[in-house]
Image (cartoon, rainbow, N blue to C red; front, top):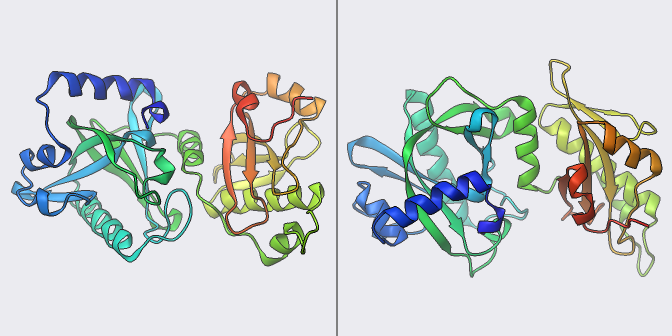
Length: 308
């Protein structure tokens, strides 16, 4: 949805939408050289004339890095949706086809052309809601390229504009939080946090499950997450070079434990520590746990936050 798009990105989309001819999403792709576009209206990447690759860029996932450069994180996990859950066989095939074309450009050292689009519903529901449709699609005159392809991280970094620039590790890490991809918990954490029968889970069990979830999330991407509880934050996240990227307070919610509070120490730290972030895990301890990260200025909008 447009309210999920960075203002700089949305301004470019609106300018192109208003300045060009009024075309349907399929017509835009067809005019870019994809003659069978009408037969592939739901594809996310196409091979056009001249062996040119065209790919959809969802504006809601576009990040603006240093110097105003746009970048986009591409998941290499073909089996799971961005909002969590398994993809259907048809969705898996579309993901395979898209990644195959993007990898082709990466291996050849060439760029690709993009259509940038917004959606009528929340971006996390694009593959799970039958009402999902393109709201606006525009042709991007700037070339994109695959700057990094990291199978071990299940991630590729797509960059708009000339080569030579890539986002920093901190920018990539911050962008990852927007994906909100559920992470599996160990059986012990799930058992501890999940209520038995009508019993409610304890806040301590939910918090323990949330911490394990977050540690798995960061370490799964190759980062180090060191326990720093008692210093105004719970985890210090650093990259392989030892550079500190985030200092995170972790809070978990679950049925029966719907809210959380920040301690005075955590509140004070949020005001003086530039790397401080709040990370809230909803449905902690379950198979559908999800998370979102908040800056100090966004704390009040976090679900379950109790300012009392």
